[in-house]
Image (cartoon, rainbow, N blue to C red; front, side, top):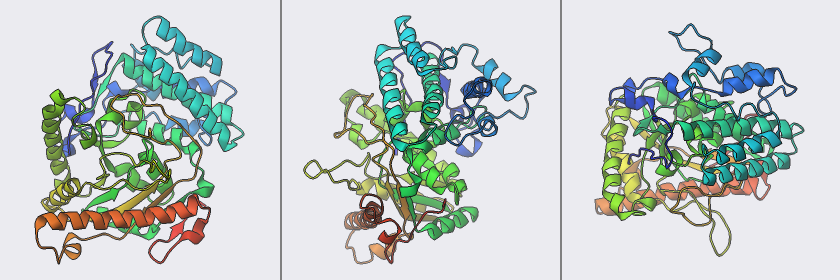
Amino acid sequence: MFTLSATPSTTFLSPRVSPSSLSSSSPSAASCSSLSSSSQLCLVSVRRQSSACPCLFSSLKLSAMAELVKDTESSSLSPIQSAERTETNHSRTFLNATTEQELLSVIRKETEVGRLPSTIASRMEELYQNYKNAILQSGNPKADEIVLSNMTAVLDRVFLDIEDPFVFSPYHKAMRVPFDYYMFGQYYIRPLVDFRNSYVGNLSIFYEIEEKLHQGHNIFLISNHQTEADPAVIALLLESTNRHLAEKMTYIAGDRVVTDPLCKPFSMGRNLICVYSKKHMNDDPELADMKRKANTRSLKEMALLLRGGSQIVWIAPSGGRDRPDPATGEWYPAPFDAASLDNLRRLGEHSAAPGHIYPLALLCHNIMPPPPQVEKEIGEKRMISFHGTGLSVAPKITFSDITASCQNSEEAREVYAQAVYDIVTEQYNVLKSAIHYEQGLNASTPNISLSQPWS
Protein backbone atom coordinates (compact mmCIF):
# COMPACT_ATOMS: atom_id res chain seq x y z
CA MET A 1 0.00 0.00 0.00
CA PHE A 2 1.54 3.24 -0.96
CA THR A 3 1.12 7.04 -1.02
CA LEU A 4 0.92 9.79 -3.46
CA SER A 5 0.93 13.53 -3.58
CA ALA A 6 -0.48 15.03 -6.73
CA THR A 7 1.94 17.13 -8.72
CA PRO A 8 -0.09 19.22 -11.14
CA SER A 9 1.60 20.29 -14.32
CA THR A 10 0.18 23.78 -14.03
CA THR A 11 0.05 25.83 -10.83
CA PHE A 12 -1.62 29.22 -10.66
CA LEU A 13 -2.21 29.54 -6.91
CA SER A 14 -0.95 27.90 -3.74
CA PRO A 15 -2.26 24.33 -3.65
CA ARG A 16 -5.15 23.24 -1.48
CA VAL A 17 -4.21 20.34 0.78
CA SER A 18 -6.20 17.30 1.85
CA PRO A 19 -7.69 18.15 5.25
CA SER A 20 -6.41 14.94 6.84
CA SER A 21 -2.86 16.12 6.25
CA LEU A 22 -3.52 19.27 8.26
CA SER A 23 -4.28 17.31 11.41
CA SER A 24 -2.22 14.78 13.34
CA SER A 25 -0.99 11.65 11.58
CA SER A 26 -3.79 9.60 13.09
CA PRO A 27 -6.72 9.24 10.72
CA SER A 28 -9.07 9.50 13.66
CA ALA A 29 -7.83 13.02 14.15
CA ALA A 30 -8.50 13.97 10.56
CA SER A 31 -10.98 16.80 10.42
CA CYS A 32 -13.78 17.32 8.00
CA SER A 33 -12.76 19.19 4.93
CA SER A 34 -11.55 22.72 5.44
CA LEU A 35 -13.31 25.67 3.91
CA SER A 36 -10.57 25.83 1.31
CA SER A 37 -12.33 22.93 -0.44
CA SER A 38 -15.38 25.06 -0.85
CA SER A 39 -18.21 24.73 -3.25
CA GLN A 40 -19.38 26.54 -6.28
CA LEU A 41 -22.08 24.03 -7.05
CA CYS A 42 -24.23 25.93 -4.57
CA LEU A 43 -23.93 28.83 -6.98
CA VAL A 44 -25.23 26.56 -9.71
CA SER A 45 -28.27 25.91 -7.54
CA VAL A 46 -28.86 29.64 -7.13
CA ARG A 47 -28.59 30.26 -10.83
CA ARG A 48 -30.79 27.27 -11.68
CA GLN A 49 -33.43 28.36 -9.20
CA SER A 50 -34.18 31.37 -11.31
CA SER A 51 -33.99 29.55 -14.63
CA ALA A 52 -36.32 27.22 -16.47
CA CYS A 53 -34.34 24.13 -15.49
CA PRO A 54 -35.73 22.75 -12.18
CA CYS A 55 -33.02 20.19 -11.49
CA LEU A 56 -29.32 19.53 -11.43
CA PHE A 57 -29.67 15.90 -12.37
CA SER A 58 -32.47 13.61 -13.40
CA SER A 59 -33.95 13.33 -9.91
CA LEU A 60 -32.28 16.23 -8.09
CA LYS A 61 -34.72 18.88 -6.86
CA LEU A 62 -33.64 22.22 -5.47
CA SER A 63 -33.99 20.91 -1.92
CA ALA A 64 -31.61 18.06 -2.70
CA MET A 65 -29.19 20.46 -4.34
CA ALA A 66 -29.00 22.41 -1.11
CA GLU A 67 -27.62 19.29 0.57
CA LEU A 68 -24.54 19.46 -1.63
CA VAL A 69 -23.41 22.53 0.26
CA LYS A 70 -23.48 22.44 4.04
CA ASP A 71 -22.82 25.20 6.54
CA THR A 72 -20.14 24.93 9.20
CA GLU A 73 -20.96 24.80 12.91
CA SER A 74 -18.98 27.89 13.80
CA SER A 75 -19.92 30.11 10.87
CA SER A 76 -22.85 32.50 10.81
CA LEU A 77 -22.61 32.71 7.03
CA SER A 78 -25.03 30.84 4.81
CA PRO A 79 -23.58 27.93 2.82
CA ILE A 80 -23.61 30.01 -0.35
CA GLN A 81 -21.84 32.92 1.35
CA SER A 82 -19.26 30.56 2.84
CA ALA A 83 -18.55 29.06 -0.56
CA GLU A 84 -18.28 32.47 -2.19
CA ARG A 85 -15.95 33.76 0.51
CA THR A 86 -13.60 30.77 0.36
CA GLU A 87 -13.33 30.78 -3.42
CA THR A 88 -12.91 34.47 -4.02
CA ASN A 89 -10.08 33.79 -6.48
CA HIS A 90 -12.04 31.19 -8.40
CA SER A 91 -13.57 32.30 -11.67
CA ARG A 92 -17.32 31.77 -12.05
CA THR A 93 -17.03 31.75 -15.81
CA PHE A 94 -18.33 28.18 -16.24
CA LEU A 95 -21.18 28.72 -13.80
CA ASN A 96 -22.44 31.70 -15.80
CA ALA A 97 -23.02 29.57 -18.91
CA THR A 98 -26.69 28.84 -19.56
CA THR A 99 -26.48 26.89 -22.83
CA GLU A 100 -24.28 24.23 -24.36
CA GLN A 101 -22.84 26.74 -26.77
CA GLU A 102 -21.92 29.12 -23.97
CA LEU A 103 -20.34 26.35 -21.91
CA LEU A 104 -18.16 25.13 -24.76
CA SER A 105 -17.31 28.72 -25.63
CA VAL A 106 -16.01 29.27 -22.09
CA ILE A 107 -13.55 26.39 -22.56
CA ARG A 108 -12.15 28.03 -25.69
CA LYS A 109 -12.02 31.52 -24.17
CA GLU A 110 -10.20 30.34 -21.05
CA THR A 111 -7.72 28.52 -23.28
CA GLU A 112 -7.11 31.60 -25.41
CA VAL A 113 -6.31 33.79 -22.39
CA GLY A 114 -3.96 31.17 -20.98
CA ARG A 115 -5.88 30.17 -17.86
CA LEU A 116 -6.70 26.70 -19.19
CA PRO A 117 -4.03 24.42 -20.72
CA SER A 118 -4.98 23.40 -24.24
CA THR A 119 -4.50 19.69 -23.50
CA ILE A 120 -7.02 19.83 -20.66
CA ALA A 121 -9.37 22.01 -22.70
CA SER A 122 -9.58 19.43 -25.47
CA ARG A 123 -10.27 16.70 -22.90
CA MET A 124 -13.02 18.82 -21.37
CA GLU A 125 -14.77 19.13 -24.72
CA GLU A 126 -14.34 15.42 -25.41
CA LEU A 127 -15.76 14.54 -21.98
CA TYR A 128 -18.76 16.82 -22.58
CA GLN A 129 -19.60 15.22 -25.91
CA ASN A 130 -19.14 11.65 -24.63
CA TYR A 131 -21.26 12.30 -21.54
CA LYS A 132 -23.93 13.96 -23.66
CA ASN A 133 -24.09 10.98 -26.02
CA ALA A 134 -24.41 8.57 -23.09
CA ILE A 135 -27.25 10.49 -21.44
CA LEU A 136 -29.10 10.82 -24.75
CA GLN A 137 -28.67 7.06 -25.16
CA SER A 138 -30.55 6.55 -21.87
CA GLY A 139 -33.72 8.01 -23.35
CA ASN A 140 -34.23 10.33 -20.40
CA PRO A 141 -36.70 13.06 -21.48
CA LYS A 142 -34.66 15.66 -19.55
CA ALA A 143 -31.36 14.57 -21.08
CA ASP A 144 -30.36 18.03 -22.32
CA GLU A 145 -30.99 19.61 -18.90
CA ILE A 146 -29.08 16.82 -17.13
CA VAL A 147 -26.08 17.13 -19.42
CA LEU A 148 -25.83 20.90 -19.15
CA SER A 149 -26.24 20.97 -15.37
CA ASN A 150 -23.94 18.05 -14.62
CA MET A 151 -21.20 19.10 -17.02
CA THR A 152 -21.36 22.70 -15.82
CA ALA A 153 -20.62 21.41 -12.33
CA VAL A 154 -17.85 19.08 -13.50
CA LEU A 155 -16.08 21.67 -15.66
CA ASP A 156 -16.30 24.22 -12.84
CA ARG A 157 -14.69 21.76 -10.40
CA VAL A 158 -11.94 20.87 -12.88
CA PHE A 159 -11.24 24.53 -13.55
CA LEU A 160 -11.07 25.22 -9.82
CA ASP A 161 -8.38 22.58 -9.52
CA ILE A 162 -6.43 24.14 -12.38
CA GLU A 163 -6.56 27.50 -10.63
CA ASP A 164 -5.98 26.11 -7.14
CA PRO A 165 -4.55 22.55 -7.32
CA PHE A 166 -5.61 20.18 -4.58
CA VAL A 167 -2.96 17.89 -3.05
CA PHE A 168 -4.02 14.54 -1.63
CA SER A 169 -2.45 13.29 1.57
CA PRO A 170 -1.61 9.58 2.09
CA TYR A 171 -4.92 9.23 3.91
CA HIS A 172 -7.61 11.42 2.38
CA LYS A 173 -10.93 11.96 4.13
CA ALA A 174 -13.94 12.48 1.85
CA MET A 175 -14.74 16.18 1.52
CA ARG A 176 -18.40 16.71 2.40
CA VAL A 177 -18.54 20.34 3.59
CA PRO A 178 -19.07 23.04 2.55
CA PHE A 179 -19.11 21.38 -0.88
CA ASP A 180 -20.27 17.75 -0.90
CA TYR A 181 -17.90 16.10 -3.37
CA TYR A 182 -19.36 12.69 -2.48
CA MET A 183 -22.86 13.57 -3.66
CA PHE A 184 -21.39 15.47 -6.60
CA GLY A 185 -19.97 12.17 -7.86
CA GLN A 186 -23.16 10.26 -7.14
CA TYR A 187 -25.34 12.65 -9.11
CA TYR A 188 -22.95 12.63 -12.05
CA ILE A 189 -22.84 8.83 -12.39
CA ARG A 190 -26.49 8.10 -11.51
CA PRO A 191 -27.92 8.94 -15.00
CA LEU A 192 -25.44 6.47 -16.53
CA VAL A 193 -26.74 3.47 -14.58
CA ASP A 194 -29.57 1.46 -16.12
CA PHE A 195 -31.19 0.34 -12.88
CA ARG A 196 -33.72 -1.79 -14.77
CA ASN A 197 -30.78 -3.98 -15.83
CA SER A 198 -28.67 -3.78 -12.66
CA TYR A 199 -28.40 -6.29 -9.83
CA VAL A 200 -27.00 -6.84 -6.34
CA GLY A 201 -25.83 -10.29 -5.30
CA ASN A 202 -26.24 -11.67 -1.74
CA LEU A 203 -27.79 -8.59 -0.18
CA SER A 204 -28.04 -10.37 3.18
CA ILE A 205 -24.25 -10.43 3.45
CA PHE A 206 -24.08 -6.66 3.10
CA TYR A 207 -26.36 -6.46 6.15
CA GLU A 208 -24.00 -8.86 7.94
CA ILE A 209 -21.06 -6.61 7.07
CA GLU A 210 -22.87 -3.57 8.38
CA GLU A 211 -23.57 -5.33 11.68
CA LYS A 212 -19.90 -6.27 12.09
CA LEU A 213 -18.91 -2.65 11.53
CA HIS A 214 -21.30 -1.61 14.28
CA GLN A 215 -19.54 -4.14 16.53
CA GLY A 216 -16.17 -2.45 15.91
CA HIS A 217 -14.82 -5.02 13.45
CA ASN A 218 -12.78 -4.17 10.34
CA ILE A 219 -13.99 -5.31 6.92
CA PHE A 220 -11.84 -5.88 3.83
CA LEU A 221 -13.58 -6.13 0.46
CA ILE A 222 -11.29 -7.90 -2.01
CA SER A 223 -12.56 -6.89 -5.41
CA ASN A 224 -11.93 -6.65 -9.09
CA HIS A 225 -11.64 -3.12 -10.47
CA GLN A 226 -13.47 -2.04 -13.63
CA THR A 227 -13.68 1.73 -14.01
CA GLU A 228 -12.97 5.10 -12.44
CA ALA A 229 -16.67 5.13 -11.57
CA ASP A 230 -16.47 2.01 -9.35
CA PRO A 231 -16.96 3.85 -6.03
CA ALA A 232 -20.02 5.70 -7.32
CA VAL A 233 -21.51 2.52 -8.80
CA ILE A 234 -21.02 0.64 -5.52
CA ALA A 235 -22.67 3.47 -3.61
CA LEU A 236 -25.60 3.76 -6.03
CA LEU A 237 -26.35 0.05 -5.92
CA LEU A 238 -26.29 0.06 -2.10
CA GLU A 239 -27.91 3.40 -1.34
CA SER A 240 -31.43 2.04 -0.83
CA THR A 241 -30.29 -0.63 1.63
CA ASN A 242 -26.76 -0.02 2.97
CA ARG A 243 -25.94 3.62 2.33
CA HIS A 244 -23.76 3.76 5.45
CA LEU A 245 -21.38 1.16 4.01
CA ALA A 246 -20.74 3.15 0.85
CA GLU A 247 -20.24 6.46 2.65
CA LYS A 248 -17.85 4.95 5.19
CA MET A 249 -15.84 2.88 2.69
CA THR A 250 -12.14 3.65 2.22
CA TYR A 251 -10.63 2.86 -1.16
CA ILE A 252 -7.04 1.91 -1.88
CA ALA A 253 -6.50 4.34 -4.75
CA GLY A 254 -3.76 4.46 -7.38
CA ASP A 255 -1.93 7.67 -8.20
CA ARG A 256 -3.73 8.29 -11.47
CA VAL A 257 -7.11 9.08 -9.91
CA VAL A 258 -5.52 11.72 -7.69
CA THR A 259 -3.42 13.39 -10.40
CA ASP A 260 -5.64 13.43 -13.50
CA PRO A 261 -7.42 16.83 -13.49
CA LEU A 262 -10.64 15.35 -14.87
CA CYS A 263 -10.70 12.66 -12.20
CA LYS A 264 -9.53 14.54 -9.10
CA PRO A 265 -12.85 16.22 -8.20
CA PHE A 266 -14.54 12.82 -8.02
CA SER A 267 -11.70 11.35 -5.94
CA MET A 268 -12.01 14.22 -3.47
CA GLY A 269 -15.41 12.86 -2.45
CA ARG A 270 -14.08 9.46 -1.36
CA ASN A 271 -12.10 8.19 1.61
CA LEU A 272 -8.78 7.14 0.12
CA ILE A 273 -5.49 5.54 1.01
CA CYS A 274 -3.37 6.90 -1.84
CA VAL A 275 -0.88 4.48 -3.37
CA TYR A 276 1.36 3.98 -6.37
CA SER A 277 0.25 0.99 -8.40
CA LYS A 278 2.79 -1.71 -9.19
CA LYS A 279 1.80 -1.36 -12.83
CA HIS A 280 3.19 2.19 -12.86
CA MET A 281 5.96 1.82 -10.30
CA ASN A 282 8.74 1.91 -12.90
CA ASP A 283 7.20 4.24 -15.48
CA ASP A 284 9.98 6.64 -14.50
CA PRO A 285 12.86 4.64 -12.97
CA GLU A 286 14.21 7.73 -11.21
CA LEU A 287 10.98 8.00 -9.21
CA ALA A 288 10.67 4.33 -8.29
CA ASP A 289 12.44 4.65 -4.93
CA MET A 290 10.35 7.68 -3.97
CA LYS A 291 7.18 5.77 -4.83
CA ARG A 292 8.18 2.79 -2.69
CA LYS A 293 8.89 5.03 0.29
CA ALA A 294 5.60 6.80 -0.23
CA ASN A 295 3.82 3.45 -0.27
CA THR A 296 5.39 2.59 3.05
CA ARG A 297 3.98 5.78 4.55
CA SER A 298 0.53 4.88 3.28
CA LEU A 299 0.86 1.43 4.83
CA LYS A 300 1.46 3.12 8.18
CA GLU A 301 -1.59 5.34 7.67
CA MET A 302 -3.65 2.24 6.97
CA ALA A 303 -2.41 0.59 10.18
CA LEU A 304 -3.44 3.65 12.19
CA LEU A 305 -6.83 3.66 10.55
CA LEU A 306 -7.47 -0.01 11.33
CA ARG A 307 -6.32 0.34 14.92
CA GLY A 308 -9.54 2.18 15.78
CA GLY A 309 -11.78 -0.53 14.27
CA SER A 310 -15.10 -0.14 12.42
CA GLN A 311 -13.34 0.39 9.09
CA ILE A 312 -14.44 -0.96 5.71
CA VAL A 313 -11.65 -1.03 3.13
CA TRP A 314 -11.95 -1.77 -0.59
CA ILE A 315 -8.90 -3.04 -2.45
CA ALA A 316 -8.27 -4.45 -5.91
CA PRO A 317 -5.22 -6.79 -5.61
CA SER A 318 -4.88 -6.79 -9.39
CA GLY A 319 -3.27 -3.35 -9.09
CA GLY A 320 -5.39 -1.89 -11.88
CA ARG A 321 -8.57 -2.08 -13.90
CA ASP A 322 -9.85 -5.18 -15.67
CA ARG A 323 -9.43 -5.30 -19.43
CA PRO A 324 -10.91 -7.50 -22.15
CA ASP A 325 -9.10 -10.46 -23.63
CA PRO A 326 -7.41 -9.10 -26.80
CA ALA A 327 -8.31 -12.24 -28.72
CA THR A 328 -11.94 -12.70 -27.70
CA GLY A 329 -12.99 -9.28 -26.39
CA GLU A 330 -14.43 -10.98 -23.30
CA TRP A 331 -14.09 -9.19 -19.97
CA TYR A 332 -13.00 -10.96 -16.81
CA PRO A 333 -11.40 -9.98 -13.50
CA ALA A 334 -7.67 -9.31 -13.78
CA PRO A 335 -5.49 -11.77 -11.80
CA PHE A 336 -4.81 -10.87 -8.17
CA ASP A 337 -1.32 -10.13 -6.86
CA ALA A 338 -0.78 -12.59 -4.01
CA ALA A 339 1.77 -10.39 -2.22
CA SER A 340 -0.58 -7.39 -2.11
CA LEU A 341 -3.42 -9.48 -0.75
CA ASP A 342 -1.14 -11.10 1.82
CA ASN A 343 0.11 -7.71 3.00
CA LEU A 344 -3.44 -6.54 3.56
CA ARG A 345 -4.41 -9.74 5.35
CA ARG A 346 -1.45 -9.52 7.74
CA LEU A 347 -2.13 -5.86 8.35
CA GLY A 348 -5.66 -6.72 9.38
CA GLU A 349 -4.47 -9.53 11.66
CA HIS A 350 -2.11 -7.19 13.50
CA SER A 351 -4.75 -4.57 14.24
CA ALA A 352 -6.45 -4.65 17.63
CA ALA A 353 -9.93 -5.00 16.13
CA PRO A 354 -11.19 -8.27 14.57
CA GLY A 355 -10.96 -8.29 10.77
CA HIS A 356 -12.87 -10.14 8.06
CA ILE A 357 -12.20 -10.57 4.34
CA TYR A 358 -15.10 -10.72 1.88
CA PRO A 359 -14.70 -11.37 -1.89
CA LEU A 360 -16.55 -8.72 -3.92
CA ALA A 361 -17.36 -8.71 -7.63
CA LEU A 362 -18.17 -5.63 -9.65
CA LEU A 363 -19.41 -5.37 -13.23
CA CYS A 364 -19.70 -1.89 -14.72
CA HIS A 365 -17.05 -1.62 -17.44
CA ASN A 366 -19.52 -0.48 -20.11
CA ILE A 367 -20.20 2.78 -18.28
CA MET A 368 -16.62 4.03 -18.51
CA PRO A 369 -14.21 1.42 -19.90
CA PRO A 370 -10.45 1.88 -19.52
CA PRO A 371 -8.12 2.11 -22.52
CA PRO A 372 -7.42 -1.31 -24.09
CA GLN A 373 -3.86 -1.26 -22.77
CA VAL A 374 -2.26 0.25 -19.66
CA GLU A 375 -1.07 3.78 -20.51
CA LYS A 376 1.88 5.53 -18.90
CA GLU A 377 0.72 9.06 -19.59
CA ILE A 378 -2.01 10.79 -17.60
CA GLY A 379 -4.98 11.93 -19.67
CA GLU A 380 -6.74 8.91 -21.11
CA LYS A 381 -9.72 9.22 -23.44
CA ARG A 382 -12.95 8.60 -21.54
CA MET A 383 -15.61 6.68 -23.38
CA ILE A 384 -18.97 6.77 -21.57
CA SER A 385 -22.16 4.74 -21.92
CA PHE A 386 -25.55 4.13 -20.30
CA HIS A 387 -25.64 0.52 -19.12
CA GLY A 388 -26.65 -1.98 -16.48
CA THR A 389 -24.26 -2.70 -13.60
CA GLY A 390 -23.80 -5.36 -10.97
CA LEU A 391 -22.34 -5.86 -7.49
CA SER A 392 -22.08 -9.09 -5.50
CA VAL A 393 -20.44 -10.13 -2.24
CA ALA A 394 -19.62 -13.64 -1.03
CA PRO A 395 -19.37 -14.98 2.53
CA LYS A 396 -16.18 -14.10 4.38
CA ILE A 397 -13.19 -16.29 3.58
CA THR A 398 -10.71 -17.36 6.25
CA PHE A 399 -7.00 -17.79 5.54
CA SER A 400 -6.52 -20.74 7.91
CA ASP A 401 -9.39 -22.71 6.38
CA ILE A 402 -8.13 -22.29 2.83
CA THR A 403 -4.44 -22.93 3.52
CA ALA A 404 -4.60 -25.74 6.11
CA SER A 405 -2.86 -28.23 3.82
CA CYS A 406 -0.18 -25.86 2.48
CA GLN A 407 3.46 -26.73 3.17
CA ASN A 408 4.90 -23.21 3.48
CA SER A 409 3.95 -19.54 3.64
CA GLU A 410 4.70 -18.89 -0.02
CA GLU A 411 2.38 -21.67 -1.14
CA ALA A 412 -0.24 -20.52 1.36
CA ARG A 413 -0.44 -16.97 0.09
CA GLU A 414 -0.67 -18.13 -3.54
CA VAL A 415 -3.40 -20.63 -2.73
CA TYR A 416 -5.34 -18.06 -0.73
CA ALA A 417 -5.10 -15.40 -3.45
CA GLN A 418 -6.30 -17.87 -6.06
CA ALA A 419 -9.21 -18.97 -3.86
CA VAL A 420 -10.38 -15.39 -3.37
CA TYR A 421 -9.96 -14.68 -7.09
CA ASP A 422 -12.01 -17.75 -8.03
CA ILE A 423 -14.88 -16.62 -5.78
CA VAL A 424 -14.81 -13.12 -7.27
CA THR A 425 -14.81 -14.61 -10.78
CA GLU A 426 -17.74 -16.90 -9.96
CA GLN A 427 -19.79 -13.91 -8.85
CA TYR A 428 -18.68 -11.87 -11.85
CA ASN A 429 -19.87 -14.56 -14.25
CA VAL A 430 -23.30 -14.62 -12.60
CA LEU A 431 -23.56 -10.85 -12.93
CA LYS A 432 -22.49 -11.13 -16.57
CA SER A 433 -25.22 -13.70 -17.22
CA ALA A 434 -27.81 -11.45 -15.61
CA ILE A 435 -26.77 -8.24 -17.38
CA HIS A 436 -25.05 -9.08 -20.65
CA TYR A 437 -26.86 -12.31 -21.41
CA GLU A 438 -30.16 -10.80 -20.21
CA GLN A 439 -31.04 -13.62 -17.83
CA GLY A 440 -31.89 -11.13 -15.10
CA LEU A 441 -32.83 -12.55 -11.71
CA ASN A 442 -32.92 -16.04 -13.26
CA ALA A 443 -29.12 -15.96 -13.34
CA SER A 444 -29.09 -16.52 -9.56
CA THR A 445 -27.34 -19.66 -8.29
CA PRO A 446 -27.38 -21.52 -4.96
CA ASN A 447 -24.37 -19.40 -3.92
CA ILE A 448 -25.40 -16.07 -5.41
CA SER A 449 -28.88 -14.64 -4.95
CA LEU A 450 -29.55 -11.62 -7.16
CA SER A 451 -31.99 -8.85 -6.33
CA GLN A 452 -32.97 -5.30 -7.29
CA PRO A 453 -33.55 -3.67 -3.88
CA TRP A 454 -34.44 -0.30 -5.43
CA SER A 455 -37.46 -1.77 -7.19
